[in-house]
Image (cartoon, rainbow, N blue to C red; front, side, top):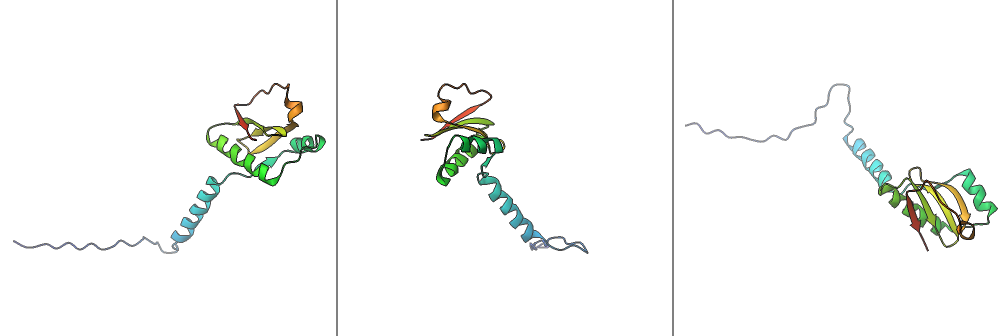
Length: 125
């Protein structure tokens, strides 16, 4: 009987005339998109909410905004679209879907309010 030997030859990517190999660029682009998708979206403040924050003298530190942004992103991953965010000094209505603060009031003003059209609440202290 005849003995048959098989040798595996590594396959080379098919490059057609006129094309260049873009594997490294597309992988890097994919990684960039993946990192952007997994990072919390930066929280935006609507003009209305900004006006309310100024009118009511509510001041939040960058650390507080970062924490709120992280929690809103977490809420979005859990399917929340509109949330009430309660901090020590403010009550914020935030669109988790758009990562946008819609309106704001201080905690005393929010004390006897009824909040509608929200499907989640975030309590921060």
